[in-house]
Length: 72
Image 1: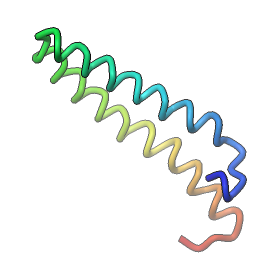
Image 2 (image 1 turned 180 degrees about the vertical axis):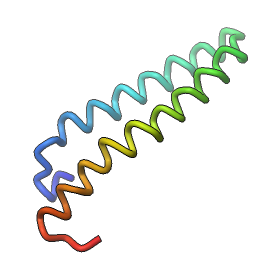
Image 3 (image 1 turned 45 degrees about the horizontal axis):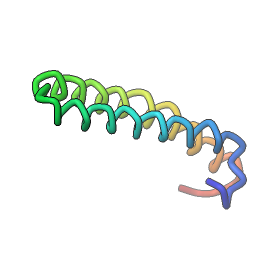
């Protein structure tokens, strides 16, 4: 993305940092004996990531690359 001068790179990086924070929180919760809670949250976070991040944010990058003339 940096090499392509993607104008939304900082925004995209923030989405990844937020997701990493969620995963870290769930990891900490799992060590506190909250396995069922963590399992549900991991499932929800994973589905959200697939539905929203990949379909929306990653597709935005795909559109940008296509508009720059890259054949994908």
